[in-house]
Image (cartoon, rainbow, N blue to C red; front, side, top):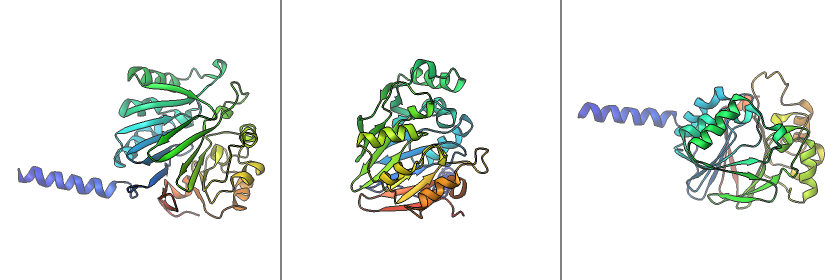
Length: 284
């Protein structure tokens, strides 16, 4: 019995030392920009509710699962698949298979643009196999994560020439603070958001399309004018992300630019009045 107790205690200490360091306290909201290499994965936690926005490639799925479990996540109340590209939802079938899931939100995608790739078939199989509700969302829809309020501010159209522009874009507000997530939305979608009147200043902007030159247009950034920016991109990725000009444009508004290739996973904690930032590592 003593040996079992000692093993249990040792296991608890090991878990404690390996757990992600920052958790939201009562009344706080946490946004984790999870390092998945060249891809996107965001965990939002507040009031014991959890939302996952994308999950990266299939190869990253076990690491994402491990991270979520170390955060104490056993249920994902909401999963948002911003658009059907593998670097955003390649492992989503795996994630759905391994967690309790409340609902899955996706954009409407024209039939001609729905991929026939294996990752997407596994995603649909997982949703069907666990009888998870799946809903198409578009600009104007709202929902909550704990005491965080989410407003979908894109997409607008039913058909785009570029799949990136189907991206579900979300403005998340928590007290006086706000976060903006735009998937891979490019300049066309950014223009639609600008014309809608729903776009506003945001405290934290998760840069669109991994910091690519196709996104974070000058007019868009002028409207958003972020206090912090986070770029999700892989080390020495073949696309040259983030684009130097995009970084320069961001620097006009903030010197607090975090990158997963340099900083690893980045955690933002909001108490509704101020935001604290905890990068996994300092990076230049």
